[in-house]
Amino acid sequence: MVTDHSSADAILAAAARVLTTEAQALHLLADHIPADFPAVTRLILATKGRVIVCGIGKSGHIGRKISATLASTGTPSFFVHASEASHGDLGMITPDDICVLISNSGETQELGDVLAHTRRFSIPLVAISSREGSTLMQAADYRLLLPPAPEACPMGMAPTTSTTLALALGDALAVALMEQRNFQPDQFRTFHPGGKLGAQLSTVAQLMHKADALPLVDFDTPMEEALLEMTSKGFGTTGVVQDGKLAGVVSDGDLRRNMARLMGSTAGQVATLNPVSVPPSLLAAQALALMNSRKITTLFVVENGAPVGILHLHDLLRAGVA
Image (tube, rainbow, N blue to C red; front, side, top):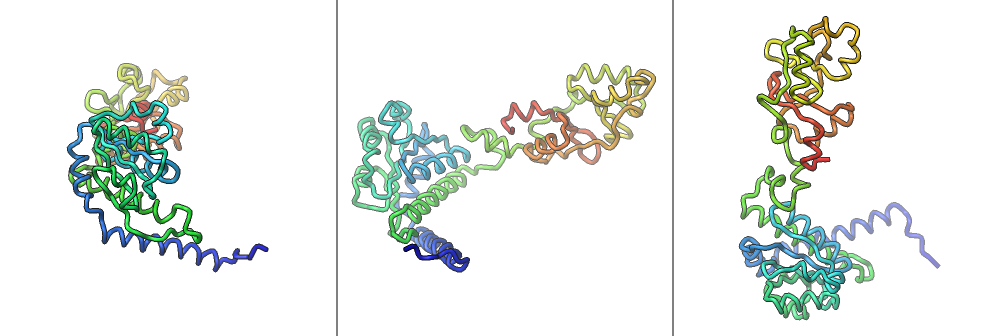
């Protein structure tokens, strides 16, 4: 017979118990940071290659996240699946690299081929495990020992607390490396291989066209000259300036709407006034969202009301923002 534990109180109590158990384990880890942690940090800082993270099962999922965090914070890294390594992916690991193997028990058989590969080619091996005397820990050059803590699973079997500890230790390593490198937010965009995350953190100022590339005409400019400016600059639009401020924008849509009187008009008469614009400090991802919501492909960038740049949808796509 199945006991009914579906009451809200029982569900909330279970959630609180799990979170408390894992929080206590994290405090324990903070008080018992592995002795090799500084050495591993210095090892990674000095390496010419990449940090190869490997695991299987739940440890594999944690390893993927650790590798992704390292990669996006200035430490070239990728994840190798333990089983795939035995079928050719060992060739991805070079003597210039560092291997980080994750196994809570330290006896995961699937890691055997990777472990042997590191020993054969003298590749530095870092182990993350909760069993100090395990095969993995004994073979490793550097040991990141997780403190003993109960799993949050009521049967003590499902990886819960142990995976949380491994994940948190990986985060601690990534942040320690960032601080040692004095890694800044704008470096996310340029550091390999964290380009995607870096693109999301790019600002409009980093991607916009400026100076002579800006298509601009005065408010009283005849449309014949405005068309030449639109064509020569290649953005399919031109900004309309009045007293040094961006007063309007002439787009292809404005041309179609004013076709009957186009050549007898000025840019100010045809333009859409008070156009959508963005500041240089806006995140590129936010600019993309604005383009999508307004169904436009270009944005003028203004500072104190004056146009200082223009951003095209293609610029965002090339940078990997989309």
